[in-house]
Length: 70
Image (cartoon, rainbow, N blue to C red; front, side):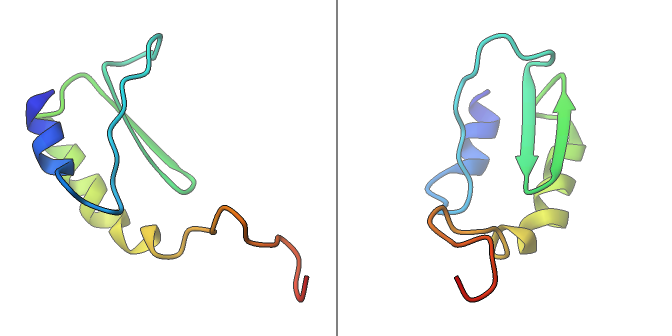
């Protein structure tokens, strides 16, 4: 898991947290997407982060209103 922690580093847009009981040892999430992996060394983890990095900036804010003009 240290390799994954190194990738996350001090990023303000990525986080890493243990969560017991997951179906796989590694689970990556982005708005509307999820990738389950057996290892953080799986090359798909880097592809996932690269492919969805733009969506990190499009994610709704925690206090944003869900209706127009409201």
